[in-house]
Picture 1 (tube, rainbow, N blue to C red):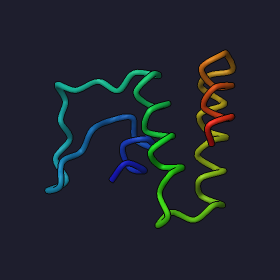
Picture 2: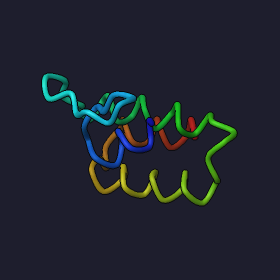
Picture 3: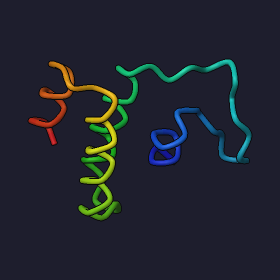
Picture 4: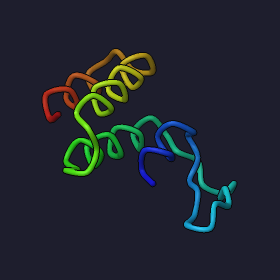
Length: 70
């Protein structure tokens, strides 16, 4: 579910409905990325691709901190 949120930039509930009243900020995407990275169920290759996507959105200090965490 977190991977979908990260990729689409929107929160989607378990029934597949997009929750339009919730906006994912860049800071939220960093928090999601950290949770994705700690998952044992997501392949390392997918985690690395998602980290590259985050780097396209942010090249600053937040990304450096997230990259070190991951």
